[in-house]
Image (tube, rainbow, N blue to C red; front, side, top):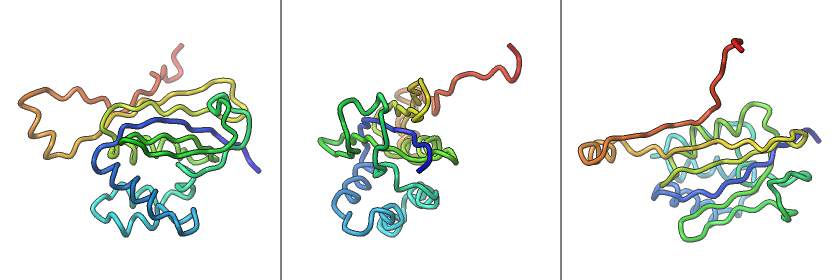
Length: 167
Protein backbone atom coordinates (compact mmCIF):
# COMPACT_ATOMS: atom_id res chain seq x y z
CA UNK A 1 0.00 0.00 0.00
CA UNK A 2 2.83 2.43 0.71
CA UNK A 3 3.33 5.36 3.04
CA UNK A 4 0.93 8.27 2.71
CA UNK A 5 1.07 11.92 3.65
CA UNK A 6 -2.12 13.73 4.61
CA UNK A 7 -2.57 17.22 3.15
CA UNK A 8 -4.99 19.88 4.39
CA UNK A 9 -5.53 23.48 3.37
CA UNK A 10 -8.13 26.21 3.05
CA UNK A 11 -7.31 28.58 0.22
CA UNK A 12 -8.95 31.84 -0.79
CA UNK A 13 -8.81 31.68 -4.60
CA UNK A 14 -8.12 34.43 -7.10
CA UNK A 15 -10.09 34.63 -10.38
CA UNK A 16 -7.76 32.18 -12.17
CA UNK A 17 -7.87 29.65 -9.34
CA UNK A 18 -11.62 30.00 -9.06
CA UNK A 19 -12.03 29.33 -12.80
CA UNK A 20 -9.91 26.17 -12.65
CA UNK A 21 -11.38 24.74 -9.44
CA UNK A 22 -14.95 25.53 -10.54
CA UNK A 23 -14.25 23.76 -13.83
CA UNK A 24 -12.81 20.77 -11.95
CA UNK A 25 -15.92 20.63 -9.76
CA UNK A 26 -18.32 20.89 -12.68
CA UNK A 27 -16.51 18.57 -15.11
CA UNK A 28 -15.50 15.63 -12.98
CA UNK A 29 -17.40 12.97 -14.91
CA UNK A 30 -14.26 11.34 -16.35
CA UNK A 31 -12.20 8.95 -14.22
CA UNK A 32 -10.55 10.88 -11.42
CA UNK A 33 -7.07 10.09 -12.70
CA UNK A 34 -7.42 12.33 -15.74
CA UNK A 35 -8.97 15.50 -14.34
CA UNK A 36 -5.82 17.63 -14.29
CA UNK A 37 -4.89 16.32 -17.75
CA UNK A 38 -8.35 17.31 -18.99
CA UNK A 39 -7.90 20.74 -17.41
CA UNK A 40 -4.83 21.31 -19.60
CA UNK A 41 -7.05 21.41 -22.70
CA UNK A 42 -9.59 23.61 -20.93
CA UNK A 43 -6.98 26.13 -19.73
CA UNK A 44 -4.13 26.39 -22.26
CA UNK A 45 -3.47 29.95 -21.00
CA UNK A 46 -2.27 28.58 -17.65
CA UNK A 47 1.11 26.83 -18.09
CA UNK A 48 1.07 25.90 -14.39
CA UNK A 49 -1.91 23.59 -15.02
CA UNK A 50 0.05 21.79 -17.76
CA UNK A 51 3.15 21.57 -15.55
CA UNK A 52 1.15 20.05 -12.68
CA UNK A 53 -0.65 17.58 -14.98
CA UNK A 54 2.77 16.10 -15.89
CA UNK A 55 3.46 15.12 -12.25
CA UNK A 56 2.79 11.40 -11.87
CA UNK A 57 0.52 11.59 -8.82
CA UNK A 58 -0.96 15.04 -9.50
CA UNK A 59 -4.57 13.87 -9.22
CA UNK A 60 -4.10 12.89 -5.59
CA UNK A 61 -4.24 16.62 -4.79
CA UNK A 62 -7.11 17.12 -4.14
CA UNK A 63 -8.66 13.67 -4.77
CA UNK A 64 -6.44 11.27 -2.81
CA UNK A 65 -8.27 9.06 -0.31
CA UNK A 66 -7.34 9.21 3.35
CA UNK A 67 -5.30 6.31 4.58
CA UNK A 68 -5.13 6.34 8.33
CA UNK A 69 -4.99 8.17 11.61
CA UNK A 70 -3.46 11.52 10.75
CA UNK A 71 -4.16 14.28 13.25
CA UNK A 72 -5.05 16.50 10.31
CA UNK A 73 -8.09 14.33 9.61
CA UNK A 74 -9.78 15.28 12.86
CA UNK A 75 -13.04 13.34 12.84
CA UNK A 76 -13.09 12.97 9.06
CA UNK A 77 -12.90 9.45 7.69
CA UNK A 78 -13.11 10.53 4.06
CA UNK A 79 -11.17 13.00 1.97
CA UNK A 80 -12.94 16.13 0.81
CA UNK A 81 -12.52 19.04 -1.55
CA UNK A 82 -15.07 21.78 -1.30
CA UNK A 83 -15.55 25.12 -2.98
CA UNK A 84 -17.70 27.74 -1.30
CA UNK A 85 -17.67 31.51 -1.65
CA UNK A 86 -14.25 31.48 -3.33
CA UNK A 87 -12.67 29.31 -0.64
CA UNK A 88 -11.24 25.91 -1.61
CA UNK A 89 -11.02 23.46 1.31
CA UNK A 90 -9.04 20.26 0.76
CA UNK A 91 -8.26 17.21 2.87
CA UNK A 92 -6.55 14.38 0.99
CA UNK A 93 -3.60 11.97 1.13
CA UNK A 94 -0.94 10.82 -1.31
CA UNK A 95 2.40 9.09 -1.57
CA UNK A 96 4.81 12.01 -1.52
CA UNK A 97 7.79 10.04 -2.82
CA UNK A 98 8.85 12.59 -5.45
CA UNK A 99 8.05 15.76 -3.49
CA UNK A 100 4.60 16.20 -5.02
CA UNK A 101 3.39 18.36 -2.13
CA UNK A 102 6.28 20.80 -2.50
CA UNK A 103 5.77 20.87 -6.27
CA UNK A 104 2.08 21.70 -5.81
CA UNK A 105 2.94 24.42 -3.29
CA UNK A 106 5.65 25.90 -5.54
CA UNK A 107 4.23 25.61 -9.06
CA UNK A 108 0.43 25.47 -8.81
CA UNK A 109 -1.10 26.94 -5.69
CA UNK A 110 0.66 30.35 -5.82
CA UNK A 111 -1.03 31.02 -9.18
CA UNK A 112 -4.45 30.19 -7.72
CA UNK A 113 -4.35 32.19 -4.49
CA UNK A 114 -5.91 35.52 -3.60
CA UNK A 115 -4.21 35.53 -0.18
CA UNK A 116 -1.54 33.67 1.77
CA UNK A 117 -2.36 30.04 2.51
CA UNK A 118 -0.86 27.48 4.88
CA UNK A 119 -0.69 23.93 3.55
CA UNK A 120 -0.44 21.45 6.40
CA UNK A 121 0.94 17.99 5.78
CA UNK A 122 1.68 15.00 7.99
CA UNK A 123 3.52 11.83 7.04
CA UNK A 124 1.64 8.73 8.19
CA UNK A 125 4.48 7.63 10.49
CA UNK A 126 5.71 11.07 11.43
CA UNK A 127 4.92 12.65 14.76
CA UNK A 128 5.02 16.20 13.35
CA UNK A 129 2.49 18.19 11.34
CA UNK A 130 4.43 20.39 8.93
CA UNK A 131 3.15 23.66 7.52
CA UNK A 132 4.18 25.33 4.27
CA UNK A 133 3.35 28.98 3.76
CA UNK A 134 2.31 29.70 0.17
CA UNK A 135 2.05 33.29 -1.08
CA UNK A 136 0.14 34.30 -4.20
CA UNK A 137 1.95 35.18 -7.40
CA UNK A 138 0.37 38.13 -9.11
CA UNK A 139 0.26 38.41 -12.87
CA UNK A 140 3.09 40.61 -14.17
CA UNK A 141 0.65 43.29 -15.36
CA UNK A 142 -1.05 43.44 -11.98
CA UNK A 143 2.28 43.84 -10.19
CA UNK A 144 3.30 46.67 -12.51
CA UNK A 145 0.00 48.42 -11.88
CA UNK A 146 0.24 48.24 -8.11
CA UNK A 147 3.98 48.70 -7.55
CA UNK A 148 3.72 52.46 -7.49
CA UNK A 149 0.94 52.34 -4.91
CA UNK A 150 2.41 49.70 -2.66
CA UNK A 151 5.84 48.05 -2.74
CA UNK A 152 5.75 44.29 -3.18
CA UNK A 153 6.61 42.38 -0.01
CA UNK A 154 6.20 39.01 -1.58
CA UNK A 155 7.83 35.96 0.03
CA UNK A 156 7.25 32.90 -2.09
CA UNK A 157 8.06 30.09 0.32
CA UNK A 158 8.63 29.79 4.03
CA UNK A 159 11.04 26.88 4.44
CA UNK A 160 13.04 26.42 7.65
CA UNK A 161 16.59 27.74 7.45
CA UNK A 162 19.32 25.22 6.88
CA UNK A 163 22.67 25.16 8.62
CA UNK A 164 24.33 23.22 5.79
CA UNK A 165 26.04 20.93 8.26
CA UNK A 166 27.03 23.71 10.65
CA UNK A 167 25.50 23.26 14.09
